[in-house]
Amino acid sequence: MQAAYITISIIIVIASILLTLVVLVQNSKGGGLAANFAAGNQTFGVRQTADFLEKITWGLAITILVLCVVATFVTPRKVSHKSSVKSQIEKTEANQGNPEIPAGTFAPAEAEAPAEATENAD
Image (tube, rainbow, N blue to C red):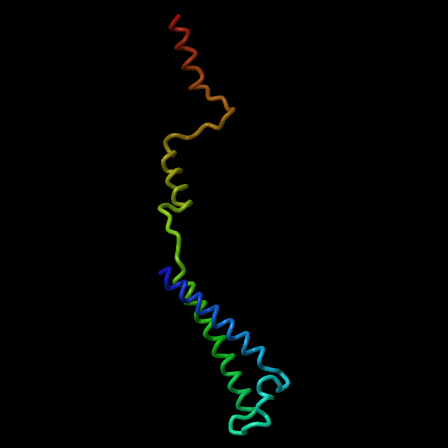
């Protein structure tokens, strides 16, 4: 699973760099790379270049989105033996018969038993 995650991550980075370059080549006013072809061949003219760059932009954006969603499903997960909630429940269930007495409180039954034992020993 980790190899698939690394591969998808690398493809996402490459697609992001390509998307950045394609967007930088475009110009919102009709310039950019499309303006360079205006004087050239009209079969692959300005309008077709702008359409082509727009299709590539949308394709790369959708590719990145899909790959990000796929990457969330193949993300390597750290498996722990016990979750913190489960271990807390088990700890609480184990102490059901032995309630803990907070420090600094007086427990009369426990405090009297050792005192009587020392008086009887004399």
